Amino acid sequence: MREILGRRRRLRFWRKKGPVQPARLEAALTCAAAWRWPVLPGVGLSGAGSGRGRRCACPDPECAVPGAHPFDPGLLAATTDERMVRWWWANRPAAPIVLATGGRAPCAVSLPALAGARALDALDRMGVRLGPVVATPTRWSLLVAPYSLEELGELLFVKDCVPSSLRFHGEGGYLVLPPSETGTGQVRWERAPLPGAAAPWLPDVETVVDALVEASTSAPDGGSRLAY
Image 1: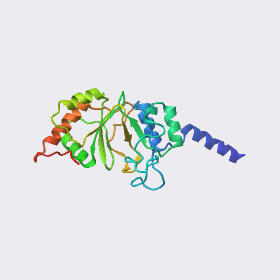
Image 2: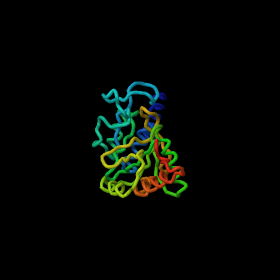
Image 3: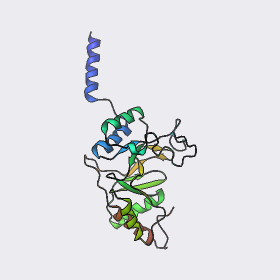
């Protein structure tokens, strides 16, 4: 009898406190429920072991971005619905977190990892206020406020030169968020969002691109600091 009562007490305590949530589920819930960023699970990697060098779980044996893209569900399934997010990661707790960029969601400007580190150092010296920065072993991504393709086109049109290493993740695009793992390695925050309930502050894309162009063209030797 005492054993049964003890089990019931432990069960009530477990229900009240709740089970420990995996890190990726917690991160996905923060993005979707707290920040209202639409997310979905990425395709992930096949087999066991560390992420670097593992094959993508998609059918393409030559996948260029192993584990780091949507597949099933597709990108259009991205949502901020907490119940859907819980269901996805309850079934696939190791799935990468994919942010659907554009619309009302954040966009991003990305660079090769070495160029990204140089760029952040240069922007800090210039006093440019940055938002969160996502880092992978191969590329760093600076999150920016939502922009349309038309706004981006007008911004780039007036530039005499834009570093060819820049990539833009806007409407219809996606970005893998921490603490995901992909075929190139771990995804982490180089500049983490500040803690709190409100969505992280994001700079305008024009401010970031202007600063990146200036940092690139002001190199003493006339070359680009943002090249590969």
